[in-house]
Image (cartoon, rainbow over all chains, first blue to last red; front, top):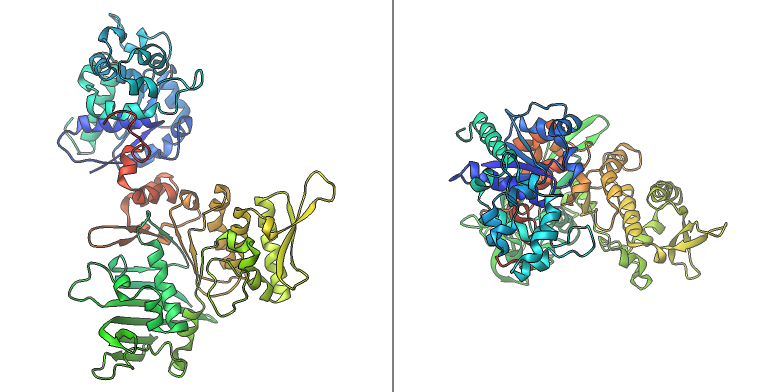
Amino acid sequence: MTVYIGGEDFVTKQIAKRLIKFCMADTEIEFEDLTSRAHGTRALETLNVMLNFAKKYPVVAVFDSDGNCIIELLEKYTSDKRNADYAAVNFAVDEAEAWLMADREGLAKYFRISVDEIPDKKSGDLEISSSVPYKTSLYILTEIAPLSKAVSIREALAFEKPGKKPSTYNSIWGKYIDEIWNISAACENSESLRRTIKRIKKMLAAKGIAEA
Amino acid sequence: MRFQELRLRNWRNFGNVNFELTNRVFIIGANAAGKSNLLDVFRFLKDVTADGLQKAVNARGGIKKLRYLNARSQNYIEIFVRLIEEQEGTSVEWTYTLQFNSAGGKHENRDINIKLEKITCGSDVLEDRKYQDGDYLSNQFTYLEQPAMNTKYRALYECFRDISYVNIIPQLIRESDSFIPSASTEDFYGRNLLENISAAPKKSRATKLNVINKILKLAVPQFSNLEYTQDEKGRPHLQVKYEHFRPQGAYQREDQFSDGTLRLLGIIWAILDGTGVLLLEEPELYLYSEIVKQLPMFIANAQKSKIAKNRQVIISSHSFDLLDTDTIDLDEIMILEPGKEGTVVEKASESETARAKVEAGYTPADAVIPKVTPKGIMEGQLSLFDFGLVQR
């Protein structure tokens, strides 16, 4: 069974794969990346073509909302905003890293730090990212990674140039996303992730691939 | 004459494949999928006509190197080709079948036996011979390689003979010491490109260089006035005017051209020079991606021009850029996929997902390149270059 994925970078694509596995437990899945040649905004620009393809095949895509209104993003990049039934195009609020951080226990264990160092969702908030004063990825780099007792993580996430993600940034996330990230726990701290799971299950059910 | 169908049995990594060929063919596959081995079938047919079957096999390291590793009870090698000859509005279909195997011993250093050789033209069977017990010599020479025998099918012979394979190595063109006049040997690395240009009739050479000049001007805007010249020893050269800060610019010879320029020049010359089937091995190497993207259209235009009218071009590649255009039909793309039972060949238009992608608006590159990308790279993306920054 091949499920097609899309995303704007390594992290969003790995998350898309893991979410599909989560929604299709016990099914052998192969993935094909529809955005292998496009990154960032250029990947979003392929959305119309991706949605055309999604009319026949299962497609799950994950992008960062980066503080933008999701409706406006959809209006900007696709003429087909109501794609929920046949595709699962999802936006993490505000970044995919916020979904990863939403499993506070998992991230603390992986980074070998106290869970208290990970921001907690405030009562009444829908997203853990609301507790972070700036972009989640930047917060992880500046506030969380330096506290890590794992040398490899500290080194991989150490700034090489101010304000720019280190070139080894992606290398730490693969294992975390695949093996440690607890999606159910993360859903408790992120409404956008919970909605994403729901949307993926609905899409897979509509295509007769998995139960809703 | 051009190839319309190819069937192989036990040829290198191909256990048993059969597919049709268009006038412009893109053979796509990952590393070690068998792209070069597939092109080598055509080169082999050329070598059979030029040097004979025994030498063609020996040049490839003998039948053990040539035969598919998993060849079982029927362990002979078979090459079958169907070709079309178009002349003045009519077309004639030719077929050539060659089956051969090891003789099982040494006979004057010739150890390949022909099991079957069959040639048809239209509905006429011109040759149909099988292995004959006892007469080992006649079993070791194809009829095709013998001029006294092949008069009835000289057109087929000439088609195979005129196949050219191009895999330009710029350093060999630039390196003047590598210039060795050698009219009788195949020049697939472009070593004798300058000699070939020199040998072309003056008017034809000027026409082709004019086309190349226009293309080079796009690729290297500082270049103009591409010309053929000879040095004091009579050795051929190409020179261009290179415009720079001085008003007159300066002239550069091929030894000062960049690798990409030389390769582009060699590929374009190869496309324009000759009428036989042209095999291009990974033409994208050394070339700027925007040039690579335009190569398919250039080939199509050349095939419609008087210079390279209807010339069949078979291209091996794993370049995304080459296919990243809507001017390629999925029918023109053959996908090589290695499997446990050898490499299989699938026409891209027969892939439901490839068709769906193109219908959705993706380019052929988006449709087929993921099919030939090794799964490990698709899955992990970092696995090749992850030095274990994080303990896995």
